[in-house]
Image (cartoon, one colour):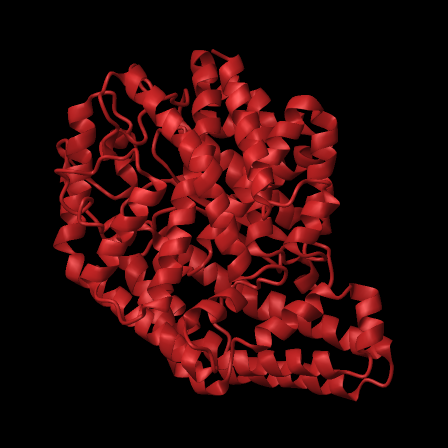
Length: 561
């Protein structure tokens, strides 16, 4: 079914709760393991087709046009409704964990869903419903504030997303002016951003304490479904990034400074790599999409039919326009077994990344569409980002069709950019740990700590003479800090694993692809570390493995000079 033909309707809260309780009663009344499994599958089908489906449609359509009052109202409804439903959802989870047929269910479905269920129960009590509603409203307020940006620049009025090409402009003065224009808008709205975040930290801390935690950190880990590592493991991983990757990025940046003819990398040089400009995709958005279809038709039988399904059913929305939310994502419409890709093309190489990164997410969702129950098709965020980041590298052989004579520049900038991201993503994670461990910190103290982390993870970057940036406020641009706490380290963990796939792909393309598809098809049946082991890849939690990746990247870049 085409996306435009998918019907949205608002369910009634009382009817949803009654339906959920009816399925729960059937599960409780089961006399055999098979009856229990049938009752749970029926509940799962209902939630996918009559609850998740409509909520996802509302959120997608609101992000397509944040000025659409109908879908703004629907998102408000869901922001208030999800916390109300959580009590019934948790009741079902508790019953599954205590069922006399648990042993038989684990034998049929594996134990990961039960481990995850035990974690999920630690994230909710009925007493926090109103606080969850307040949290949802605040994250929506942040999204709407960013989407409202209309910034005069270069004789135009631009959204934040539309500044992308200016940040990569060959003229250094233009790059600086673009950064200053964005900073001016953030400074003008600074009290709003600080106010939203003050309230978010306060409400998340209150929720955590109501649930019995000292602060939000452990609750944040449980919300992310961490089921095979903890904050201690992540701290060691961060130090591995600081030890092996930060020096490598410093080397890249020194080479870039020399290449573009500057003494030191300023903030506005951070995404500029070549004196004649960064690699830019050729052609219109339609032409980029057409080559994307060709790429996936040729890549493998696994992707050939899949890409036709996506494009023919209007499951991409990639054109930037006023009122559209920023960023990009892949959502999943369970009732139809179809993913949906949202992005904002801006004329940079990032447009091609949408056709690799987000399609990696979409392929994983599509491959798991028939997995029952649906919870076994749901992978943790760290695993999901392996799907997307590794696909970026598997797409390399088709880059000439996007970049033409700039393809070699694309390879270098993509690989170095993937590595350059790792310290930044790690910095975001360490910042969030500090925020929630120091939840009484003032806005000025938060900004000061961001500056401390800048010196640790991005020592090469000169932000002097750039108000807003040198004041340590740039973190306000990072939506994950507001909307998805503790998510960002997943990109870093997955980035390291994806670089393992890249290294494998240099040696044996078929073997690397087979490992990738094996990881995809396992979906949510294994933990993150279990999937990494299944793909016969090294764990990222050992610092020496991060060092091996750093050496492999260095060797590849050196050999191309």
